[in-house]
Length: 220
Image (tube, rainbow, N blue to C red; front, side, top):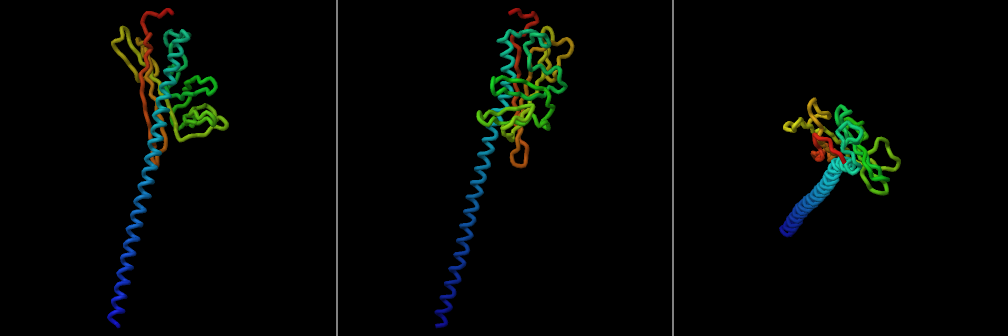
């Protein structure tokens, strides 16, 4: 009888070990699945943020392009700095850094380039979202009802300058040196946002020329 009892005891002990191992394997599997799900969710949010960022950066460039094209349609083909200049509304020559924000009027859907902000530390670079139209936009004030997002955008506008007869070019300053004529703008649109514990950024650059540029004044 003693032998039988000992055998039953051994069988019960072996079953307990199996149960502990099985629970351990099960917990390990659950933890792995949860970790994978969290990783996929984080990756999905990261992709979404980068998609929004690249579109906001592209929008910053297109805001300047819209002003340039609008000036042409209005007959503004004069040289930079003149009363009827082709770069009216985005001429950065009066600003030390050339940094700006692009402000969208939600009623007229027209753009204004404001050179007041000097860096991302300025809260006005933060993107806000319109409550009913869902538009991302920037503002010099804090519009009531608009939601502050995680994205900030800063545009830098440099002058593209040619000298006569155009065999030399500069593009890293807001004004043209002596003997050079402004023939376009180099637009750098940068968007920053928080991604975990780091600051992520998306930078797009476009060179927009005044392709109507000529050393002979254009007469419309």
